[in-house]
Amino acid sequence: MQMAVNFLYIIFLHLVTVVVLQSNATPEVPGLIVFGDSIVDPGNNNGLKSLAKCNFPPYGRDFKGQSATGRFSNGKIPTDFIASQVGIKEYLPAYLDPELSDEDLLTGVSFASGGAGFDNITAKVASAYTLWDQLQMFEEYKRKLESVAGVERAAEIVKDSVYIIVAGSNDIMVTYFISNLRSNYDIPSYVDYIVQAASSFIKNLYNLGVRKIGIAGVPPLGCVPMVRTIRGGITRECVEIYNQASVLLNRELSAELTRLAQELPSSQIIHLDVYNILHDLIMNSSHYGTSVHACFIYIYQEFSYGESRLTDPPVSRDSRTLR
Image (cartoon, rainbow, N blue to C red; front, side, top):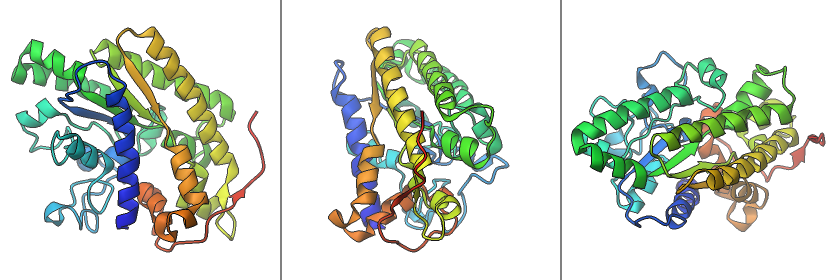
């Protein structure tokens, strides 16, 4: 599992570094602010009546004090590693943490909610906070920040901080494929729907003073343990149609982010490629060590439902293609 954590850490550290280095502003990063789903949720769901929360053992068994904070992990989550490496703080707290301090407001928080997606129906199925709920929290955060740091300093913190958005996987995997809640869409049209929702979310952030944004693309969802278990046949192979949908969403979202970066003055908006890195790790695991399969199990542990054994490198299944 330690190798899995190290790979995940390296991937996300690379992603946030891309955002920082492509900025023309001051190299100092005052804060890290995060929106999204369970991959980056440090405990915002703890107070919800939802199955999408992890504030109980064995979660947190390797965290400081063996505390189940609500992180979907046995220990730190990617944004904790990033905040620490960038020199902001050791852990990135949940905005809804009852012990959140004024100092935490100055250096950033996470609004992420396990089960969320760009499609509002995705979060509603999980009884989680939607991305738009998270945006409202951010507006409240800004007001609190102004009371702590003053209006001028608060505006500088908002402008110079790095923003990470991790969403879209639940939309494709859960809402579209597994729950079939968007059956009135074909895959390309649903991808367009998600991309437009993401674009609208980014524009709203920009209008609130945000300038440095990195959006993580979706991974190869056809290789998620739960998908392989329920759709991959007796040999639990990767399901190609899910991976094709992932590729399509990444391609269309990347194009839209490029357009937005040109449209919105002084913005740095970056699409962060997760798919190709993880797909290579999965399909060529022998190059990295066979235990690298644990990496993907770790990343999507909320969907693994008891996944505990490592398997041979998966072979893509389902030859259907997207138009």
